[in-house]
Image 1 (spheres, rainbow over the protein chains, first blue to last red):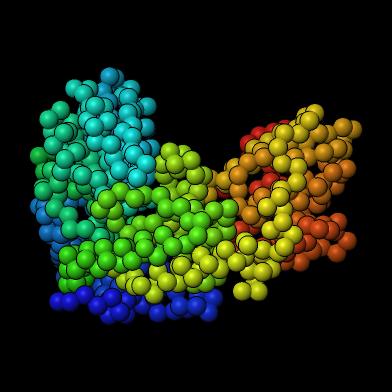
Image 2 (tube, rainbow over the protein chains, first blue to last red; image 1 turned 45 degrees about the vertical axis):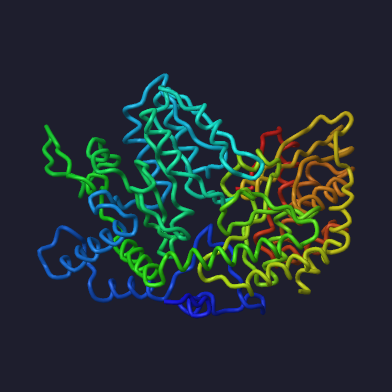
Length: 404
Length: 147
């Protein structure tokens, strides 16, 4: 099936509007992506016809909801090249990483080291800092180069027999850098270190196969994947998940409860205490089905082409400084405009109907690395077109006019 | 577009480009920092106070045009005022940037160029950060945050 961005765009009702009298150019999908009609419908249908609590009732509606949740889990598993038992539903990638930090982290202690990179989002820094505080471990930071690529030699030099876990983003939310996860995984395996990958920014753009990547954990957020907010996924290797204690305790995650002894459910439900976000999981399943109908390869091609166009167009904007120029990067463009604060750029672009993010992008250490307290970020997704990029470039000309 | 012009008035653009009273303040005896965690912006406000009067005020730090111009104009506007005057002026300024209307009898004067901010609710914090910091400086100097 050939990829037609105009047709894709029609699937997203929110994009069919004007903002301040201008057609909406939504360029902030890296913060949260918009939802296709089929996702909105799937959640509405569940609530209208099939909703009840899961795994408990003996009646028809509970059976339907349970099936819908199971189907969503199976779909996520297929999407990642994994087994259903390895798919844990959580709230978002942040919670997935916290789950690993708490549950796997219990086996770490003083002298053990956790390695992160300079380009991580706060969600892949703070949980590990908190773990280091609790368990007396040491946090080490792998540097990046001026293009925003991980310095693989320095990274390798940081690894030692003390390294217990490496936490790295698959794709940087600021720079668009795609990290060489398979190579990193091989280095980790050779040292016996676990590898936890933050895939939140990768799954909307790239075909992901967790076994081909060779990592141990992979975290993602539904809302960045065109699904609803409030649902996320932790994938973990089955044998590893089986060896880990529960994260949260409560209903749903137990086999049996007695005051003198409680036994836990098998994976993945061991890690899913309380009633799950059933409609959220169904919405995420529908989003993945939508992406599969279009095809991740077609999406990747479209975004690659549009990204190259955006890079060319932005290079022609006077006074624009782009951060993140690593080879093979995806369509995330963080930049500064000479003499104009990113917040002012964002406000003026908004008046032109162009939605971008301005700020530190939850990556303050990265901002510090580049000596910029804030940046403007425009990020592409499958529904973006050359018109969106053109609107951005026109908006930036307008910024220069106001600040002339 | 006229709303944008209202926001980015020439006085504001001028104070952004050439901020007044930026840098260290000789003899400063009050000082506080302000942070906007949303954007990572940071302002330091200093004042020299004698006999309950602000003799001079200055600021430093990096921020957007609205926060820079606001700090610049504030340091000019508060000179010679008492703590009680300042409290009233901040209240009036806050009302101005949230409603677009100045209180009758207010002494905002030049500060009225910030009326356009009220059309941009996300930018109110940019305009008020330095005021929060100045108030904190006079009250004892705890760092303040707009969150």
